[in-house]
Amino acid sequence: MSGWWRDAVVYQVYPRSYADSGGDGVGDLAGITARLGHISGLGAGAVWLTPFQRSPQADHGYDVSDYCDVDPLFGDLAAFDTLVAEAHARGLRVIADLVPNHCSDRHPLFRAALAAGPGSAERARFHFADGRGPGGAQPPNNWPSVFGGPAWTRITEPDGRPGQWYLHLYAPQQPDWNWRDPRTAPFFDEVLRFWFDRGVDGLRIDVAHGLFKAEGLPDLPDPAAVPPMRLRGNPLACDQEEVHDVYRRWRVLADSYDPPRALIGEVNLDPGRAARYVRPDELHQAFAFAFVTAPWDARHWAEVGAQLLTQPPVTWVVENHDVPRTPTRYGNPARARAALLAILALPGAAYLYQGQELGLPEAAVPPDRRQDPAWTRSGSSRDGCRVPIPWTRDPAGAFGFSPPGSAPPWLPVPPDWGDHSVEASPPVLTLCRDAVRLRNRLLAGGVLGAGDTVQWAVYDGGLLVAVRENALTLAVAMGDRPVPLPPGRVVLTSGPLDRDGLLPPDTAAWLRAEPPNDRAPAD
Image (tube, rainbow, N blue to C red; front, side):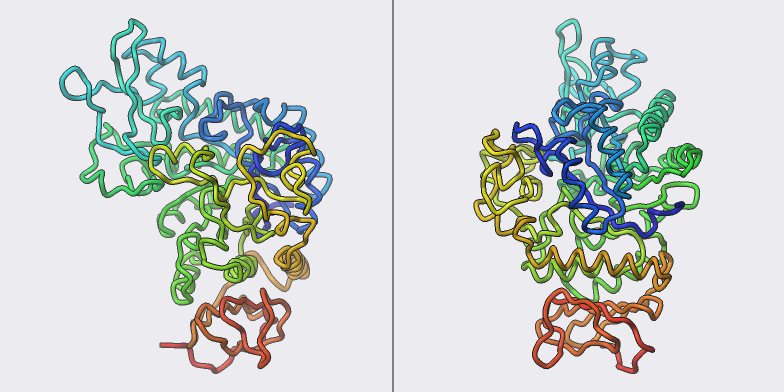
């Protein structure tokens, strides 16, 4: 079916932390395959796998040393083929991750660049430059790394002398490709074909707004103003106009398959800039990150939602592997449940991160157990949202993550994780299943459509209301007191209504909409 990505519910899997079949404490492809029933049971239409390709794991797979192979930590290509076949048999499409902005410092082409010397064709594939100051001891420019510290590392030349510097917008083990080199685009064309030919239904493109850097790599006016973990803070290192030519090229390639493959971009920019990546001849979708950073405020959500929907299709998300879990980030589990119901009510695709359906909070990972490369460079750690998810009440095997008697999990699991497990069936799991199934029924029945219009309003008491094509109403109480519901028949709520039938604070409801009411919005 063409255009499945327009309104799909996509379940994001972080392979390290989903299911460990081998007992080494690290999740793997066979573990994912064995647990696909959980994903299809939610009603999801696709599964997105974060990187499983061959990698030294300096940034847990986002440092790729071979784009066309599976890292032995996760299995092999046969295990991947089995996963794809089983997913397709269950009606699940498969989205793989592609990391085109940077690779691993162990990639054969980067190793060849190190060996070849300054001015070589091998080094032209990356960003090598002479240093500044006496003896070239200072970096070529003042750009900071997203992970903290300088974005440059100096190498030792083959003859043993201190040499050139190379650019890495992330960790030193992640050198940036030079997309101005004419060999880069054809190289990645072949990577896309490799995974499309293996049956992948789409690719999620990491740092899709990156790739090209400003010509000449000039200094930033104020590098101290660039916040850590935000590439968008350096306009010279991302969102260059030339990047759109890459996605036009890839769109032709993706559309050449039958059925066409989908391209989903991680475009962490303001909504207006991100929308430029989803033109008819470029990416199919770009993540709507504005809700990830939005405060719990009805007016803000209404403004952001209306802005995002001016450029459909929208890909809604409030959790992923890079940000704190919503029960912690929003301040309580009730808000997390309401946010989940909110993104599932809106037109477009919705991405759910593994464990979000269990209401997992951010896990406290002791500093000496943290593995995020950003931790040592900037003091920021994403480990708390990457802890292995729990499957059983029994703590054996890290609550069912691994077989009993296995090695400890790669990140420590909280002792109360069993209360959040799939086996414990927390109420949010039932809510998630009910919401996705109802959404699917309304879409299948033609009641809802991927291109539906939405009318947003904010009422007194912090009530957010979004009416979708006069067919479904979303109401979210984002204030500090119960509020009356808008007209309509309540079909689902993220928590119980109060005794007077009011919507309590931090609660969302779906209503089958009735004609617009005459209640006046708040000023």
